[in-house]
Length: 91
Image (cartoon, rainbow, N blue to C red; front, side, top):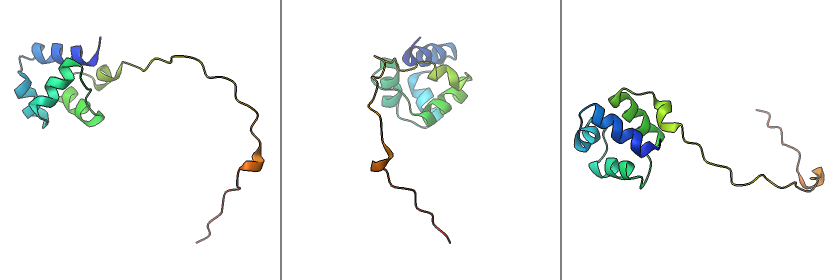
């Protein structure tokens, strides 16, 4: 289930309007509409506020993971001649 569906479903289960959710977590109604249409996703802080307001685990909003499209290719051997030694700062 996508973030937009989770937010919408739990908002309806709590009998809240988009305006009530927005006011309850301190964001604009426009932000809630964009989340529920999938136009954008809430920031980590907003997702936390949504989870507290709707009484759902915050992890539920972060279950989606980006899909890896391909495996990385092997890289050439890296030599240390191009790297500088770290400096030591004595105070």
